Image (cartoon, rainbow, N blue to C red):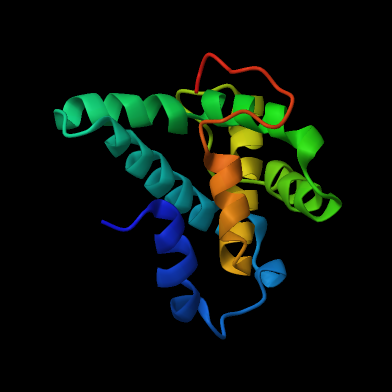
Length: 149
């Protein structure tokens, strides 16, 4: 089985060739793509523990993809973002969404939307190593391990 890194670096680039510049997508479209990318990365990482009941896998993934956990991850990573990444994150965070979060605080939801927009942007841009770095369970350089990782 190919690694997640191999999938991103070998399997996707041809599929995305010739697509629109990711800077031209709305922040909510970037978040839509980023949500799927993050979910795939998290679910794939859950399989590192081996074959287990799907309910266990779902619970493990759910804890990582909920808005509060994404907001916490973003708070750790924000100081380590480039100017370009920070601008995309802020566009996503500040985007006006038609939906209201049911099970999340509004600020967590907004920060999570910014995180997902950033992942979507990096994915569409072809920066797969950076997607995996931001979505990994490892904290940023010089940071402690979070309780939600």
